[in-house]
Length: 101
Image 1: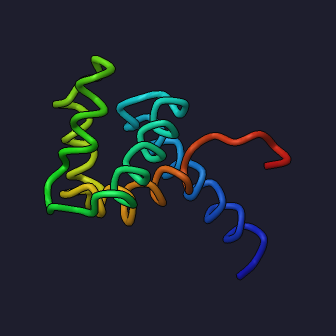
Image 2: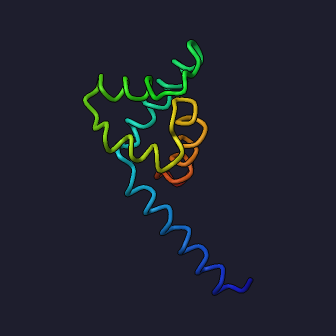
């Protein structure tokens, strides 16, 4: 792969990450809190193949369930354990980080 190909690939990856970030239904701080809360609930109670912990967290904080649910579905989060297994890594890979993070 030559330099021009690497540059195109890098630009494409950056655009894909930008699009992924634009689709996040909540700010990073909320998503951090959500994933931590769901992880704790799952550790204690396990998954019942629903999004009860995820949706309960959103309802308690007045967050938009429809937008959150659509984003979770799009990224493979059909139950609480899939929210952590599929969606949390997608968010982690695409969120903005400090340059030295």
